[in-house]
Length: 482
Ligand SMILES: [Zn+2]
Image 1: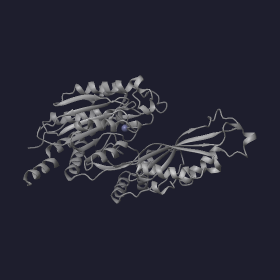
Image 2: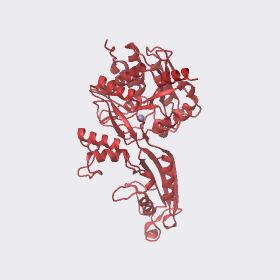
Image 3: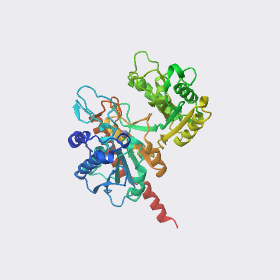
Image 4: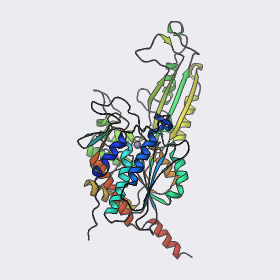
């Protein structure tokens, strides 16, 4: 007898509520220091919890977990359909948002949902507001089809876009409720296309450091000081030259490098053969710009594994419109380093500190301050049943098997949860595909993809529900051991 079909209707079940969520400017704490008094995060989590409670899901309990001084986290528990089954599936997403970034295109607004064709525009829809809707609708779909699923716990956190500073404290106090986690599904990752289920094989880490160079106690007319007092900008350039080759962009600190595994390289080759220059073509480059990486696959490799520095903030320099002839007293920059997946974030920060703090150029006053380094992540190899299940799930939802790719960005908690639950299977997937513009202007959610990812997750949950899990096997052998 064929398996009963699992069906999902994301638009009917989630579009209205997701649109209402888009109206809440629930910025992550890094972008709304007064989040406790503005109350937007609280309003968002309450709204999402209320929606969750209304779903027709057997064995569902919903609560907002709060810890003093920390952003709240939405916790949904769904009992296993078979009370004798063991193991927990942990589904992860987040409800905090990035700031608007800039002015959105004509007719679009970060906090007013706009539906154009099959795309829903608004900040935080794809990154990562859809996740609670997707997670619950997937479980609901499994139940509606009359299939089994294991116990599920959904965690939707409120500090991800600030590097998840609050997640660990919540997970510490929730550990009894998480139970015996054997599968983690992260719904906050990317997809290079919208035609299949994409799984993330690696993420880069990130270290951001503020470097300040002081040369004077106050600014002095440049007619008097220049030529005698060294420019703080020039000295900062010398410091930066220690860590980055300004001709090639190569990072010069050996501890920030790591080799990609051959399996990953082979997948970049295959991706490039099928899709061409996915990375280069996605960039809004100016005419004539020379990109690094000699081939499409090398660009995929560089995006996933190259250490690279970006100057993401600057202080001590007036705007172009208002700068006058003065030798400024100081210059400070934020240097953001992306790290290869296999590099430890803390070790990278120590290496950078050693290089940047040594021998201040021209006797200037140099200060170096690091902001919570995050390690990258490499997906552990999937157990056989799961690698078959993801291909079946992708085929059921998209009509073709799943594929693996790397993300050049960072999801700090994945490395942390990997350490907390060693040996569990992890699937990181998501809807952040071409044009979704997460963190940029005009963020949008591709609704058919949201539907298909939800359907794929439902199929994976059902496949998991149909397995006799590892814990059964352990119990059986325990029962026969002396
Ligand atoms: Zn996200």
